[in-house]
Image (spheres, rainbow, N blue to C red):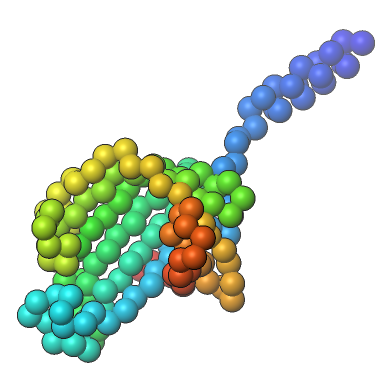
Length: 160
């Protein structure tokens, strides 16, 4: 009888300590998308020489970081940052619920690149949801509750 009592107590202890998993294992890691800016987006840049990169990292502790930066297409050197988000996320079916702080290069010109440490905190405690799907080894991110928006494809990357 004592053994049954101890096994029951141990079972309840393990059950009570189990971790709530509000993440999706496939979502974990770093995802990127890049595109060539058009001359009108960034003053003073030659078209074709640069890439704008959107990078999102989802961690197993339900935190995430999102960065938007520009690189030299020829040598992959980061030239500056436009924005960053740091916050937490939870997954509910095919929705990612985000709560984050947002930094930008400045409040007027979104596409002015600056060193990462010079980004300015613009807003705090933003809450936003985005739909997500996986297709052909890509993460497809939607724009939230909107039904008719384009899904944005991100590819998984391994950071050096």
